[in-house]
Length: 191
View 1 (cartoon, rainbow, N blue to C red):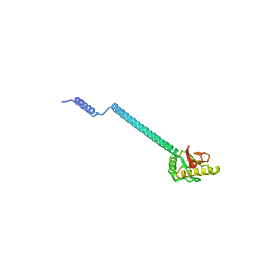
View 2 (view 1 turned 90 degrees about the horizontal axis):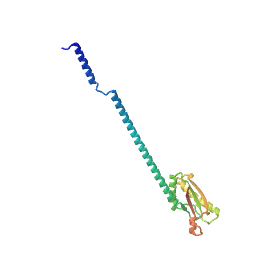
View 3 (view 1 turned 45 degrees about the vertical axis):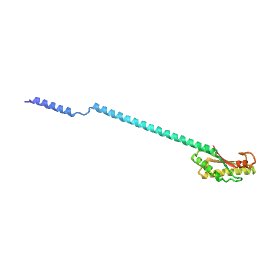
View 4 (view 1 turned 30 degrees about the vertical axis):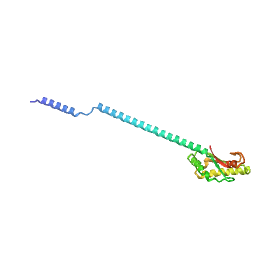
């Protein structure tokens, strides 16, 4: 039979073996290495997210810039078209806007409303019939008629100014009916 000492030694060995078998978890260095790996993975994921967010921000800014460029180009095209349609003709001794020109004036007004920094000068003109003083007043009334049209269409008064040249700046020289008809006008001049 086993002696007491041998029995005790066997029990201690058995207990130590059992304890060693139960302690199968990772060591402190393994736990530290796992923590470091998780931290590196989280940091890498955060950097990837940040890079994706930055790429998206750059894409959005580029799209906005392209959209603004297109809007500016369209506004410039519209302005160029309007500059070529900037003369409004009037009947003899009248300052009433003809219905033929209402659509053209609406296009000008629409452009001015969309571009509040754009300023125009409305020049009023008359043919050579009448006194110079009368023609200056008539040119002023014609310019004011166009200005009032713009104001009713929503254009800001700060965008508009009126000047009358009367008969001083004829578009066509001569005394023919055609020449005089070409001189009875208001001109929208973009600044």
